[in-house]
Image (cartoon, rainbow, N blue to C red; front, side):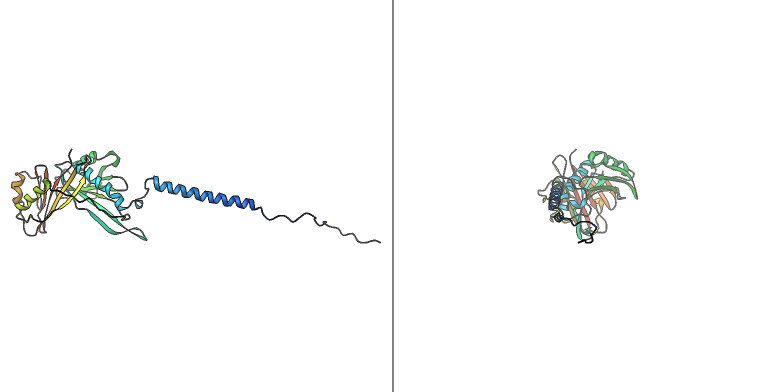
Length: 286
């Protein structure tokens, strides 16, 4: 008997090809987990050990000691005879750190004597006496010479003339998270600045019983620069009333601003039509 012979491939008798190996998938999963753990560990070490790389990584309360020390450095650099006052502390809230997060900026000021024509030389002298790490320098600004420096931790220092025989030096954190806020140690005890302030208020026939506002800053040598400030009330007040306390040689007589030295204290009076303001300051040694 004959029959047709079928041509073509003979059916395979081998078992079916196995599914993709699970071993490769397992190793891929293990490698992914190890990589994630490594990245998490590196991130934690960076947060713990590395310095901040942007201002938003430091809150106001973390930057506050830097600001206070910077004010002390400026007070020392200005010299005891050149320092007029430590300005009041300002914390300005309401700025935006990011589109979704509120922030605040801490700002402190230092007033320095600079008679007309000496502004650049006074600023240059201050810049030369600041820490080298601040990279302080003086250059042209919109309204005269300007000092610029970096106190560290993204805290900026600037200085410029005010046009009335003074310079205003500012220390500013810029907008950043508020954190715990700014809570300076309360200044206690009455020093020579309080005595000089009382004498000035008495000479101006102003009340002396109200407690003055006390502002301090740590000097580099551990001492404290101190300003006692008081609103002297409204009504006319003539600088001539302070002339006897100045001994006839005021540091600054540019109405409505008047300043003089009383021993180790500098007294600054602003006697304009607004309520008069008097401040007495003891600077940093050296």
